[in-house]
Length: 93
Image 1 (cartoon, rainbow, N blue to C red):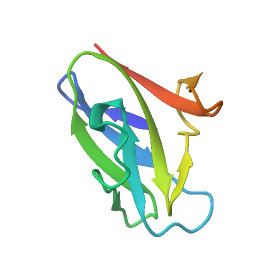
Image 2 (cartoon, one colour):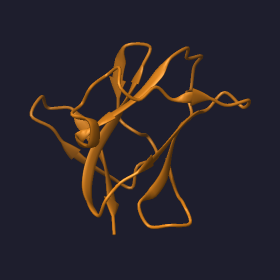
Image 3 (cartoon, rainbow, N blue to C red):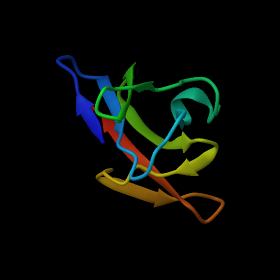
């Protein structure tokens, strides 16, 4: 899930695991799909959060949950990637 900030481009990515999760990273075209670059913070409710400021454009992203790459189940849009799996998509205006 993505929550829009007060300014365009300010986003909070939220991952709510269905099962227990220890470490979650946010990866995507905005960080060259680096699975160790943007660690998400665990909230009191068990969800994981990451804030980012992105320029206008379309970005594909996923979550890396305890080493497993997963799409955002709450994403409004998804596309098939070159591996035949789904990437979530966010558009910043």
